Structures are given as C-alpha cells and as structure tokens.
Image 1 (tube, one colour):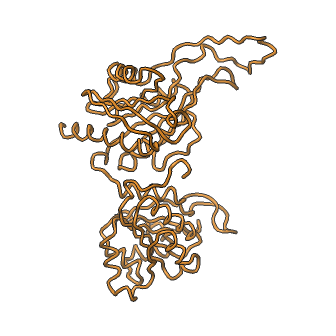
Image 2 (image 1 turned 60 degrees about the vertical axis):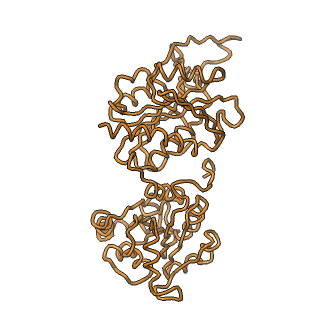
Image 3 (image 1 turned 90 degrees about the vertical axis):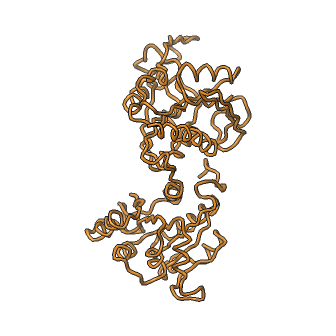
Length: 416
C-alpha cells in the first residue's frame, strides 16, 4: 500500500471487525491483514481456530492489533463470548476460510468459537477462501460456497489464481492479498445508500498520442487521482467503470477497468458507458493535441537532421463532446489543472462543459503536482459554492469529493 498511507479513516475507523483465522498456509497473511485494518482505525478481535495456531502464533495478532486473541468456546472470557463478539461486530471476516470452515459454515455447525460467532452475528460476513485448487474445484466445496452466498447471504472474496503451497503448483485457490481484502472489508463497512445500485464512470491517467512506433506526445499524469476516485466510489457500494490511459497503478479492487492509450480511444469507451452513468468524473489528463500523421517506422535522428517538425491537430474534448449523452439527472465532475488564474479558468470550464462540480489544482504548488500522492484543490459548484481542500493524501481528497458529489446525487434521486 505504498501509494495509500495507512491512517485511520472511514469506512474502517472506529468499526469493530472480528477476524476469523483458520488452519491453512495462508494464515500468515492474516497477520498483515489484521495490522492493516488496525492501522486504518478498526478495532480487530481475532478468533483463531485450534489448527490456526499450528501455522501462526496468536501472539502475532496481539502484537499488531493490541487486542486479545480468542480461540476457546468455553474459557475464562465467559461462556457467552461468542454472543458478545457476534453482537458487537460490524463485520466478520474469515481469512483464510479453509474448505473445512466453508463446509461447517454452510451446515450451520456450532462446534467452536468461530462457527458459533458466525451463527450469532447479524453483521455482514466475508469469507476469503484459501485451499488447494483440487479442493476448491470439488463439487461439494462449490455447493458449500454457493449455499453460503445464495442462502445465508455471506459475501465471498476470491479465491485468486496463482502459486499455491510448495509442490501444489498454481491454480484457483490462493487467498486474496491483504490489500485486496482490506478493500472488500471496506466496501461492506462503507456502503452508502446514495451510491448502492448506482453506476459511476471515472476517467484517469494521461493519454499517449503516437508519433511513431517508439515516441509519443503525452504528459506526466500518474492517474492517482482518478484511481482514488474509482476506489472511493466502489467502497461506497457503486458499480464503477474506470477508463484510464497508460498508468503503472494496479487495477482498483472490484472496479471494471478499461485501459486505453489515445484520446480517441478514451472517447470511444466513454461514449459507450456514459449514457448509463449516474455519476461521471472526468479526471483524465487528456492530451489536447495529437500528431496529424503517425510515422510507420522509428524516426531516426540521422535521417531528420537537427530539426524534427511534427504537425499537431486538436484532440476531441471528451467531456464537451459527450454532454448530450449524459444520463438525465446524473452528476458530472470536471477537473482543471491550471498554472495561472486557477479560479477564473476553472469557473469557465464549469460553465462551458456543464459540470456540476469542478476540481481545480495548480501543479506548481509543492506536493500537489504530477507523480505525487497528495493534492490541494479548489472545488467550485454550479450554485456558486467554493471550497478549498488543503494539502492531503489523494485518497482523502477523493473521499471529500465523493461526499460532495453524493450529496448532489441524493438530492436528484429524491427528485425522481
């Protein structure tokens, strides 16, 4: 999570998470998961099965959460420990969820502290399966997982595909990485009725307009702001589509990510998605111009002499060209990066492109330029409102932007 500082923040902050850990090789990852959730502000109570202790010491969880680890159904903590844990939980997350745990959960067994807690709680339950690929593909395991999802209403994250235990090769059955499970937990903790069932479209990153097979015209945008917006909307319960130019950032968890290169490719994808979008954020740094012609081979210095002339033509303005395609009642956010006259130019774009909100920033401000994890922005709205967001991590800026967009979305939803 190098690009995502782990500081207490919604939707994890102050929430109680019961982390169930069962006896599988992936149990070692649960320590990192417990640590990350705790650093985000969650109160993590670990419930470890007896077999889990064969893979990782309970003291490891105490060390990263600062809280006790529970394992015995009947202990000095009281015979009703499972009731207290289940009633207080905002989320029960089982990681790893072995084939045995999934089977016992599907049957409604109550033979240890973890399964009794599953029966007591009315909080969302998230299973992170982890097992050998043959065990995962067994018809009974598939039926058990389906029963947990369809009948019991549990949520299932994974498994992933990749290397399994030594000697077991690769295949489906690998537990998702802690970073992904943190986000799956966050989505269940942070569901917002305003965003649930909504479609959100975000554009991000730069575009690269080819000069020849090697060179291109582009900019320094990393895509961090757009990726943060897509993640934030997904955490709130929306179905999110991210159309991004070239970026080294990994696809956000749960988000439908489409990767393109040029402005015209991005326009084509946006045109296909925007008619169904309830909220659109144009966060991409689209190149204003592209070479009129793409040279078929690499342009060699020896053949061009001391000067290389490239004729540029204007690229489509994606936000402007899709105004008429926007869904009635939808909310649209624009972005403006300006090196001078920040407010005036942003206000002009707000009006010209019929945005509901526009987020403006000056790349010359220290910590708010390209290729950094922080931002400082000015938000203008169509009602004349103006708000300055001080320098902070882009994920937090994205949260504040979505708060304001969500407020407008809620009002329009009430209006039909």
